[in-house]
Amino acid sequence: METVNNPALRDRYLREKQILRHFSTCVPSFLLLHYSPGELLTNPFSPSRYLQFVADGNLLLYDMPDEESSFMIKASSNDVGLLGDMELLDAGFIPFFVEARTDVYTLALHLDRYQQTLLSDPVFLRYVCLSLAEKLNEAVSNTQPVPLKERVARALRRFEVGDVISDIGRRAKNLNVSNRQLLRVLKDYCAEGVLAHEKKGAYRLLRIP
Image (cartoon, rainbow, N blue to C red; front, side, top):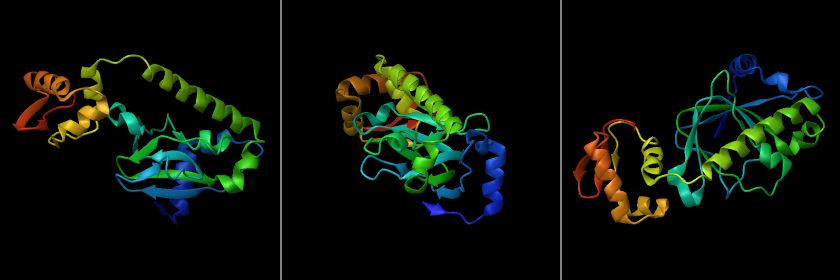
């Protein structure tokens, strides 16, 4: 993570994402943060103390025991992701892993400085409630039984076309299935032209399922 000293870019993101409309009694001063691909924005072992609006870039959210069922969040002008809302309300909350899949820029407020002020802002609290409700709906939908083939498809969507996927044993363990069950699904995807068998335990992604 790095702090970007570029007021013009910060202000452009604030305007484009209309972030200040989420505040009424509080007019905060934002930091512009940059994360490189593969860098973690939050993780359970070192929770972030920032409230962050995702201004640009793609993120991957997942939990440790079921990383293969992770899902993508894409920031756009109509869908500004918010990170740190749960930590704002409960400092003991253990967040998911949030990983930058591309270069990611966020507009950030340090919770130690702004927490009490934010909790007194009714417009902001309404926005947080909407954000939490959306995350709750997502969590509920993710608790429904998902066929193994779809779970594998979600895992494959983490990769780029042309990537080689290996370490089948670890991936089967993450999915809580046997190697044989996973290999059966991978064989199906080979037959469908999604994967190509490169060598023992290695598959090349030909297209996104």
